[in-house]
Length: 450
Ligand code: GLC
Image (cartoon, rainbow, N blue to C red; front, side, top):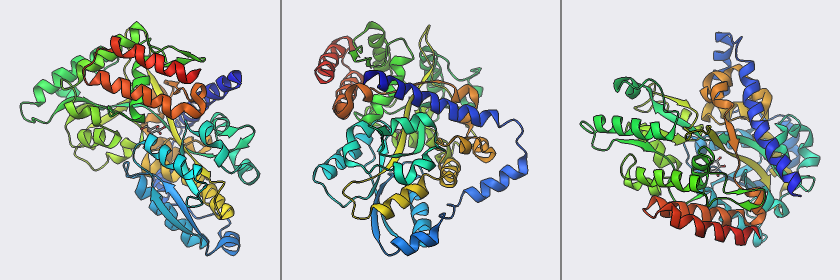
């Protein structure tokens, strides 16, 4: 069982790396005009394939889709896609955004599933949830097994539980560093920080200068709130500084001196190079500060790239891999979302048709261009228009080592385990020495791992 889990996750990370490296390999011969034409076409949702037959079979049925929150343009993207699907198929879709924090979205679904409610037909599923929610999800293999062959194999494996395809990959994610190119130049800094120590000192330098004209300016923003995003950010801090990945092969490893040193460096940032309030920041809080021109550096997911277009920092920032500690290397936490159909849905056929459409190559291309989300279909990631609009697909960024959250070790208890992690880390951010917090995180995690 454990052995299989290792393969699944290694496969997932490998597949994501493959998706992006394939896309880059094809980037070389890009001609300008076809790519431009195809960008214009891709900012509109594509037609639904086989719409007439779907209309005949399911037209008039109503389904509910729990989609994205107002993260960047994600909700707008969902509205456009749903409108197109409704128009083409006659299937009515009620779009309900899930709570912004992934763990809150998890709790909402868990309540829905445990009451066997038919009120949700299609839902977004975080990459760390398949193990926990598999019993409540329709096996999509008979209907979508063929389409799944076009998807990166590792992610399909992540979404396959006991031989059943309980979700279809929709888009991937990994953590990256956003930095202000104009400010690096202004303060004579030759490039983005390679180490956390360099990020700390560059942030200090830029902040001291910018504060003279902007009292709201800070060096660095990230996701510091006590929620799932902090588990993702802290996994990057630890894994990029020799501090491990919280749990490894069933052993709780979080209580180690390198993890403590890195987390105490983070503690020293709060209110100094970050706003004091970063301890309650989620993705959009960080992006709003960065996009308003109030931060030099930001850790975020690729969606923030498209979302920052048209803001005061448009044209003044770039992206790269996250920094690392001495003697270690950069990493990015694997994120991403899948789509599933509830076992309690009264309209499984119509719901599956929506999942088929949303996870099609045409929609993934639209999403990659409209919302700079990472495609999970390799042929989409190779598409010239996609490569051109998504600089994180460059090999030097895309080939960063990926780290996975411990969903394999914690299985149905993943959400509980992540909560122990992010609450403990948030306590450190709020001033408690990591050395006194890590032992209690470790012992609570040990109880869960068993
Ligand atoms: C992003 C990732 C998801 C992660 C969440 C944390 O949405 O795709 O995997 O759980 O951020 O905030």
